[in-house]
Length: 97
Image 1 (cartoon, rainbow, N blue to C red):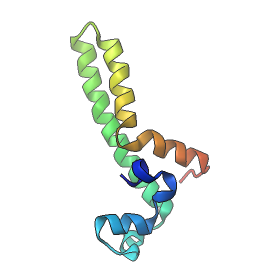
Image 2 (image 1 turned 90 degrees about the horizontal axis):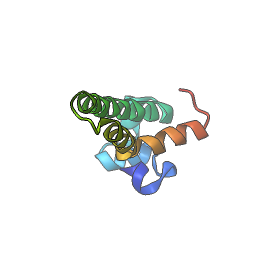
Image 3 (image 1 turned 90 degrees about the vertical axis):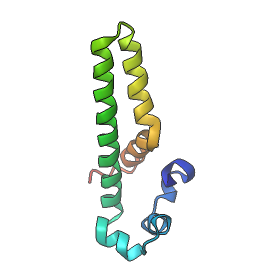
Image 4 (image 1 turned 180 degrees about the vertical axis):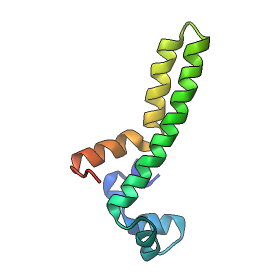
């Protein structure tokens, strides 16, 4: 939510802690660093995308209009939750962690 509403600069360990009601230190303990937080966010978004792709494959197997639906499902899944924005942010920061 922070990424979607405030952009990449809004996603700080302190802001995440405040949003979920824990201390900044607690967030650091759990994720280790901002890079760890970004990695966890991306992992979560990849899981969501995988579920959407599973749904897309089911459509492909059962519907003539599937190719168009497949593209729509993939793009919707990548946009939903900010996965595209997070991936772009990570790429722009040249952070491979």
